[in-house]
Image (cartoon, rainbow over the protein chains, first blue to last red):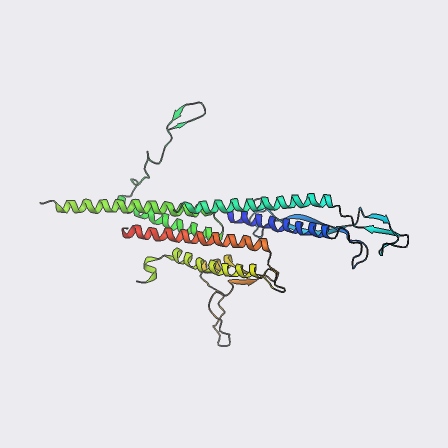
Length: 139
Length: 96
Length: 124
């Protein structure tokens, strides 16, 4: 398999990890938001990744698959409620619903996504070095 | 010479021991002409590999290896030609 | 001295790839410069397509001009630059940058090698 295709694989990894980072940043920024245009608190977003086989279908068994973001889902489980009647967003019972974003979990995901990004960069660099070394044969 | 797992030494056929056969030439062609034809076909092979590598069907090292082989074969051919020419010149210098 | 005498098809093909690659460099630089520009759609060089066309002997898309009613098509590399219809992605463009440079170096090295072969034959 061509080394160039391998580098394209790493590229897809980079894009996917960057989107994960973006979503995590959005979650962290909106961790205290109780009021959204839709009404209700901010719902934590999650990125779902999937494999996507490459365009040229020589043989589906041979060509490794790229990764792509299939969906960004919102989850509403784990929303916490707090009794605070003086809060502008409190409902009739005086309860305020806070987002289900746990900063600690998000930070861990952030570190993981960042590491995965670095790993993809390393893989890409390795592929590039190999290709350049193949050119050294001509020297 | 290669040492295998049991420590025995054996002789592997190396490219230096058995030079590429140019002696299987047909009677009509000289050895040099055979070499010329070989280099020519190698050249065409290398061109095909280069095209394939540009399209992405072949790895870069396949194309570079093919190009390098052609280069070496060509240099060998040129050396052989030079020797033949100088041998001919020496012959024609001999006074009859 | 005509070009065909010294340079075979592969050398000329490699030369062509060099000009395509340098155009690609310009395109990618444009994409990277306009990452944050609103309503900007990324452009890409259709390298494989143009190469295939070239190898099959039909550079660009030649419109049929057999009938006097046919519109004259403009020659040249139509189909080299394509609009992707979406905003450029930083990571993908960086990768394209690297791959393009690699392709350029590959073509240069191979072309140099072929020229060296010529020099060998000429006795240098």
